[in-house]
Length: 113
Image 1 (cartoon, rainbow, N blue to C red):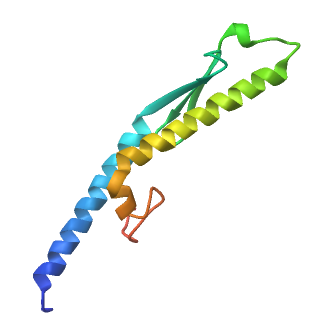
Image 2: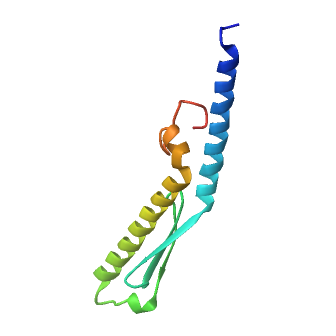
Image 3: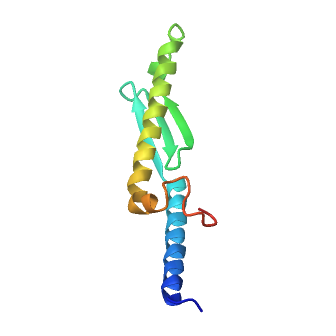
């Protein structure tokens, strides 16, 4: 047995709990949706907390066959705003746990993280 073995066991338990918390938050993020709009609500985009684009809604008033470029710009702006809001929401939910685990992309080299 290593000196301080109980401390090592406690540390391992804490790491396992952090991993479980992290995985639960990741699941919550995949189920949470953020919606943003552009052009005064003419175009709306919905993105999950983990950044997956789920939908785009376009008000018929935004459709002008003579000006497709404006509609493209509105769609792009709505999607970018939704993604930015999604990232901000994810960072807030992850908080200190995300920092401790090295951000959303992984951390600590633990399986599943």
